Image (tube, rainbow, N blue to C red; front, side):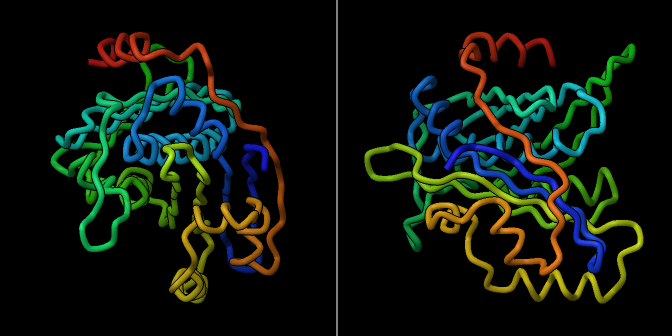
Length: 250
């Protein structure tokens, strides 16, 4: 499956929806930066969320997401110009931990939660707009959901996932974001809560061949796909250049 993103709308449930497949670009980033499995999973989640946030912008503004939680992976950064292209970076690419009880990649431990998620939007004005919230879990999805609620006052469901095989290649990567519109009702909230109970992981769905449209259709019976955007990883994004960008942000 090619990497792409869709933007959709469920009119009956007053929700705008975004979903993406980022498997190839995540694996490309793994090869460029020499990422170990947990580092791949971390960067993949952040890049997927950043690309979907970029699709929310009406203008082609530059969007930078900077995450630092005090964990062994250090800083995690992703940058997009809201055009379907993304750059990514982790402070320590040789990061790999798993949770003892489940064997799953320990993204939350690698990132840590004694820090922040920062979003910088450069809209071409004199100064870029910057907003920052404390990390909640370091698992990335929950942290973006908290950012939308706390910083933008938009109740959101954020699901992100990356599946890395034993040979270290990225088998599946992607995510979806569901956001309640201002005219949403209590029934719409209850609908989303019920739908998200026991909903499969997004990485397992992508591995099974489900497209972004398929995933949204599993949630909404009336999803209207408004836009489709191809996604690519910017190959000129090397580790030293991203470090320079990080230093410029202070």
